[in-house]
Image 1 (cartoon, rainbow over the protein chains, first blue to last red):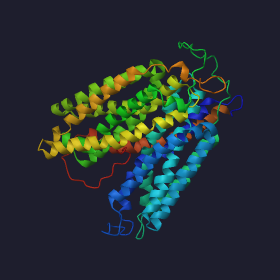
Image 2: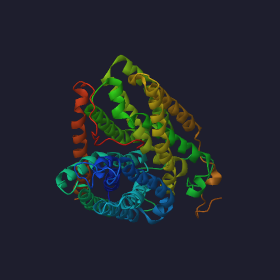
Image 3: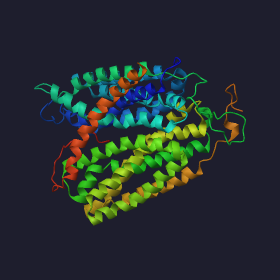
Image 4: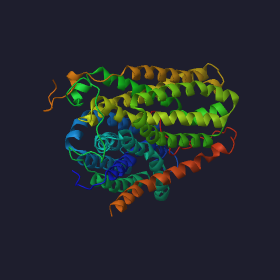
Amino acid sequence: MAKPGFSRWLVPPAAMAVHLCIGEVYGFSVFNEPLTRVLGIAHSLRGQDWTIPEVGWIYSIALMMLGLSAALFGKWVDRRGPRCAMLASAACFCGGLLLGSLGVHFHQLWLLYLGYGVIGGIGLGLGYIAPVSTLMKWFPDRPGLATGLAIMGFGGGALVGAPLGQELMVRFRGATSTGVGEAFVVMAALYAVFMGFGAVSVRVPAADWKPDGWQPPATDAPSSKPLAVGVDRAWRTPQFWLLWAVLALNVTAGIGILGQAPLMVQDMFGVNATVGAGFAGLLSIFNMGGRFAWSSTSDRTGRKAIYCLYFLLGASLYFLLPWTQHTGNQKLFVAVAAVIISMYGGGFATIPAYLRDVFGTHQVGAIHGRLITAWSFAALVGPQLVNYLSTARKTAGIPKAEAYNPTLYLMGCLLLAGCVCNLLVRPVDARHRLAAEGVPT
Amino acid sequence: MRRLRIAVAWLLVGAPLAWGVARTIEKSLPLFRGAGPSSPAAGTNTPGALPPGR
């Protein structure tokens, strides 16, 4: 609990410290190739070293566990508070890295699955939702800005984690090691310090705390009960599932570009792989920046309006992308894709504040945790959809430059469907709200 | 003192993030220097790029 005089501006960096670390999972791909030559060092030993599909499961398990743990432990996180959850997250995530390092040392893939995948994945889920409800309690006047800052950190995790991992592997690489195991140990130590800083810095506000001069907006709901819906009630409401669809559709559509960014720009404009990689990196920056910029803007426009903008403008820009290729305007293509991805990131960062608007702050962390299953769903379905469509077109002999057009149009249509779901979101019925003693009526 | 604490806290998270952003921008500059011809640069990593679905 914060003492009087504690500045709420110390809470966002605490949240960012945790999210910047766990967001490293996005940059895990830099370890994939070195993990396939742990025995051969210079080259992968066929039949003895791990393969890329085998190694790829580490990341998939971690992401699956992120969604599962966020959904399962959301209530526990709300009950125990952010510090305890952040420490648990640090213990799991850093412990997972250390166990993964042992897996590399002894060349036991199951240790990597268990360490980085399962245990580290639980750390991801706990850390992702830990600061969200606390931030919204500290910033009832700017919830979008507050959650945008934290979730921006998650988006930025790869921007730090990927080059850090590469630097460390170069430093530790030798005749008998690819440097991956050593890099895991150093990263675990660094992240433990960083996440510990976040856990120590975070505070929860007093129950009656509010920013100076701020008054809660008058509610227009025909109920005398405060806006507080428990997680077990919330997920049975249509509002929850509409917001689930909003997030799932927004994420699936974002994958239309993110998933194939390097290859797409190579096929559409004939550039080389280095330029393709640069394009993907640039999109990552816009993904991160959009999380803060758009989510902050939602405090002024309202959540429903900003999602309408994401969906309508996003769909229009998706329909525009094939035209930019047709005209050969690569810079315009990059600019349009960057705006689309910024709104994709914005969708992630704005959803906690939207949940708060609909269900109140009572168990918003737990509700957010369950909503994250939409992300897991989209992460499984989206890439398959995009890969299938573009591959089928290329196989059918359609020029590479035009192979992505149906995918892009489909993504635009998905965004329009998301817009419909968003427009259907209404205030929660008063019977779902908790009475003063916390019992649904 | 309070302001100093806030500044230090933001610097702690801002510095590594700025480093990562600078590294990524540096690698994305070829995108604006004019497109090179397509070449099979297999195995090229995409540091900083998000994998599908994130």
